[in-house]
Image (cartoon, rainbow, N blue to C red; front, side, top):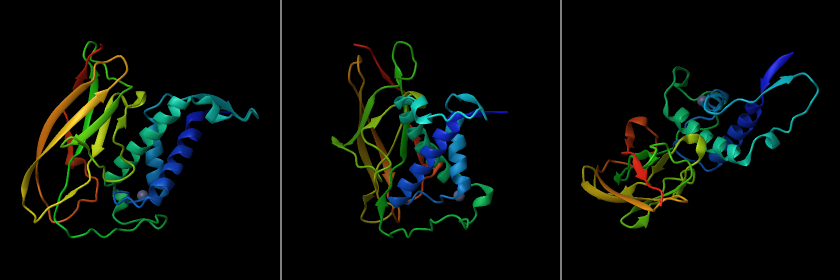
Length: 234
Ligand SMILES: [Zn+2]
């Protein structure tokens, strides 16, 4: 007799579906999709959600999808994407080269000068409790217009989900530059809408130095941690 965490089945399925989908979109930052990377992503998610143990070997077939609420499934998808990005960004010892079971091989970067943006990452807090707000819609605008993301796996507006504890992230698509070494300020605003809260808008600007080509790899050193955004109940 064994105990088994039912969430494993749910998460493995979600991670595999996500990898297959993102692979189909040919996003440059996805460096590998081998079994190890998928398993690392599965662990990333399983370490962040409560387990649901059952005694296996009792001949009962569980409908795991039924056991997991639709909110939890949405959270798992969102964490799987986050985990996948983290796994793709982190260089691990067995990954000097693509593994044999990995079908993704290096993409060619276009050598056109570009302004490459940081990934913006931050958290939204309730102004009275300082607890993370877990249900809000966040829109990033550049010069008053909804900012375009690098690819379809990043969403703008971004919807916060409970399990990620108020954390949002954006990766704005690179803009063409005339040459590398050009310095320019970019104006952004972040709009937060949450039920029961007053709408809030934060403005900020970032100086960017253009580079020789469009940045295609996700790099954790290239993340801009935003100050905590605080919203208040109406
Ligand atoms: Zn891999």
